[in-house]
Amino acid sequence: MYSAEISRKNPGCFIFLLDQSASMEDPFGGSSDRRKADELATIINKLLHNLSIRCAKGDSIYDYFHVAVIGYGQDSVVKSAFDGAMTGKDLVPISELANNPLRIEDRVKKADDGNGGLVEQTVKFPLWFEAKHAGGTPMSSAFKMGADIVQRWVAEHPKGFPPIVINITDGESTDGDPVQEAKALCSLGSDDGAALVFNIHLSSAAGNPIELPASGDGLPDKFAKQLFDMSSNLTPFMISRAQELGMPADEGARGFVFNAQPVQVIQFLDIGTRPANLR
Amino acid sequence: MIDALNPVTPAPFSVEAFSCQKAGNARTEYEDAWAIRGSDSPTRCRVAVADGATESSFSALWAALLVESFVRGRSSGPDFFEGLDSIRRLWKRKIRGRPLPWYAAEKARRGAYAAFVGASLNAVNRGWRAVAIGDCCLLHVTGLPEQMELAHSFPLTRSEEFGSSPFLVGSLKKGDDDPRPHVRVSEGVLGPNDVLFFASDALAAWLLRRAEKGEPAWQAIGPMGIRTQEDFETVVAQAREDGTRNDDMTLLRLTRRASWERGAG
Image (cartoon, rainbow over all chains, first blue to last red; front, side):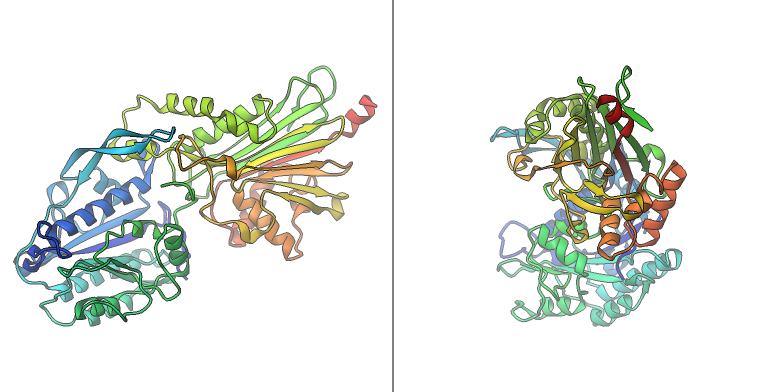
């Protein structure tokens, strides 16, 4: 289980669910100037940035993954969150996504100069999503739409690695209990295993980030506990990869983080030899 | 078959190379590299195999530059990795100036990575010396064809040591990425019926796993087992059927020529 090869012939599938509801306008993590919607936009842009780079090969990009991004909240509806050239599309190959950001910013980054010092480099940073916050939080409906995409995907890729659904939210669902919908989604899958659900919880509460816990004990509020309950166990490969990447994942760890930017999640699937010293 | 290599006297070693790209990939996407060269002495030979990492860009180029630099040089120990700067400059020069989309430019900025094993051999004293980083392996097999057994495996010795995230040698010099602590060196002597195999990781792991289980491993890749590229592809197919991960596979097989010994004697 969870051992199907991911390649251009047998691609993987990521489905992101973005909470774009009014409550996402509230401050993030006790901050006075940063909203949860800002944090969400940063996380999804970073995840897609890293995923695109991961699939880049030479002067091209390999379609190792197909990606859907579903937004929920704006006018209390659930729909594809893509703007620009991809408006209205659900699943797109990573090459289409990488080639169609809303805009590309130049950012200055400090990099190792190889001689013990740092040198400033200008790097391209694409943005696909802006901060959005309006309407209710139809999270259960978002999971239903995610399940529809999962069902379609596994019908087309019955032997492939099962889809991974990553929900980014403050947890306050307004259309019923999302746990049942998440469980229903996880009842779908391919010959290689059930679909996996991960949750990234962005809270207004201050507190230390929590990454990949194996237990819901000690989580700060009922929303965190609910999202933990909705989250799948990591596979053994994912646990070992998370440990290699410096994340605190023990046996039983679940795909849940609280007030953290888990951009390493994108590395949890194996697409070939990854140098241990690649930062 | 490539004789290594002297046009006047018979070559002391015979080296054969076989390779196969990942299933589903085009041949141009093969990211391993190998090189063989007789040196400035008719009694010596140099061999190298490298495996460019899937998760880095322009890694086939980096792997090719590493093996070529090794066989054209004189280093046979860790000092090979002291001279990486010039190979790195060459890699940079070859990709500089290409118009790349943002993701390709960013990936290239992170550098290419490869596993490497290289060996130099001396026909007079039959000695070999090898240097390695990562999980490309030298497998020293001894015994008559029907009784071949593993004498030494380097740098990894057991199939469970192979993983998907080895430390590899990078095409960019970084402060926290010094390959020198990760360099391994080994030496041996080639007996009369001995064979040295050089294999990239997936193939080496499969061979070691078979040997650990007491299943025939070395005969299948020995001179009687693989004679042609088609024979090699049959072995690769068997390895993949056995659950070996889909990867580029490369095998170099080096033997001593008895005729050279008689001539030299």
